[in-house]
Length: 253
Image 1 (spheres, helix red, strand yellow):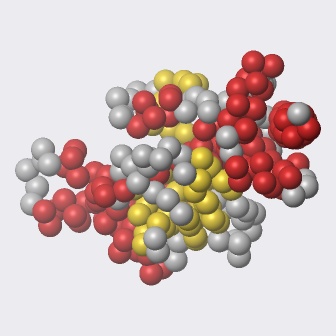
Image 2 (cartoon, one colour):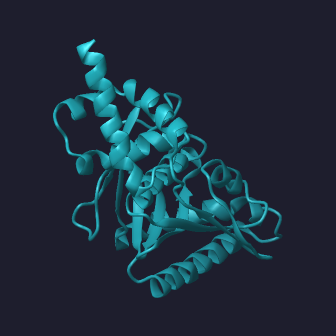
């Protein structure tokens, strides 16, 4: 299915993107990223506590003590992020009108740093985290930026990041820094993209409607990522032009 990720257009630098997810995903329709507001504080505290629940089960603390610890740690983390990354996007993730996570991203001239991606227990394991990261990869590739994120050694999340093409940059005792960059696409990869694009009725219709390469760049990059391909900014135009030629040749046969 095709899912739209919509970013609040009132925020600076907001834009829309498209990502193709498998039909088995539990999320369809529209996923919204909107800026965090003070009213989100109770949800965000609950969300943070849910990410620490397993490790705190082994402590001798009461539930009240565990919650007090989580609330204090969340406050420290939030203060650190906002002071260190004052121009980052601090977003709540919504699906079907309800908050299901948060996505914190700091964008610089050459790199995008994913500060945090956290989902509620009910939203985990349903493809949403993969979809958000692929969407961010499509945006990073379009502007020639690398992506950076930190992960704790042994975290299950590292398997997801590796599957999405991240690799180890630095290995610390407490955190590992992973990096992703869009690689150049050769002829074989371009042929694979054409196979994917031929089956994408929506993209085919948009191309037939004379959509510009700039307008369709996000769609092409996201479609490539869904097929395991990573287009840099220079390859997107070539891919779309190849699609137009292939569809024209098919139409006149």
